[in-house]
Image 1 (cartoon, rainbow, N blue to C red):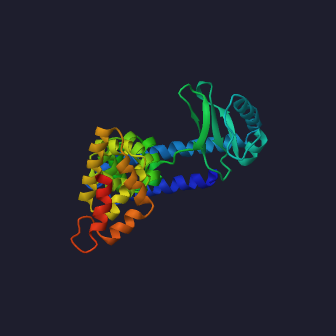
Image 2: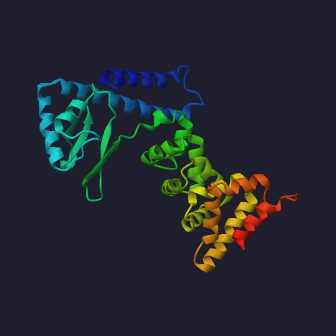
Image 3: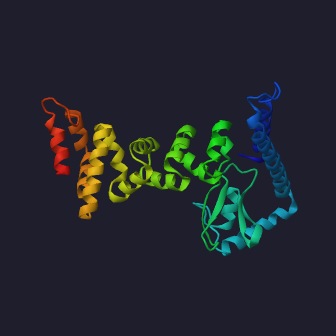
Length: 295
């Protein structure tokens, strides 16, 4: 998106904020007024920054960005994927400019229709990679009340990353509450990547117990599958029994075996043949399979 388009988008955001209060300030919108004023102030800052950058890029001194870009690359700053030279970087619409504390900022030209990127640094302050700049949360989560509740649970940086994985504000809020922190939720989503599956598991187990189960098994990503093919109460009992036995024996082979078999379709086939504990002909099939793993 070019500078003009971003400036027009900023104007649309400002207009949308003012429309909320076209009928005056009421009890229903008082709570959002302060936050909306902050959004408007941020849009003004963004607008000024965009204009200043456009003016700077149109000036005679802009040629010097090639020098600062070469200095940044010589200092170990990364080139975007598919770019191998400074000239290529400049042609794609990016350049490095001198920033604060002797570091360099990776900047997108206002006229370039490319993603804004930012440089990541390690603990020692060394540039180690580049990622997409975090999109403003207001553009992702348009419900101001939901965003306000989420901001009480985690930082904007954490919310941006987690929302990309979860994709729903209400579900993210519940997962954050159930997990207890953004860090724990990110770790859990690293093992169970589907948010709906993790939500199901957190309904069945307290987070500390779920963390211990995930740490014990080689197949944490298959845990939710048990709840698809076995009733929740039985699945919880089976997992707790395996955990107790595993703690005593020093290994969790039975749990891993069952989860691996289920992932290959064995558990699904048995579950469809006879739900756990069913009192009907053929019901022993699943009971036999689960009891083999639990014996």
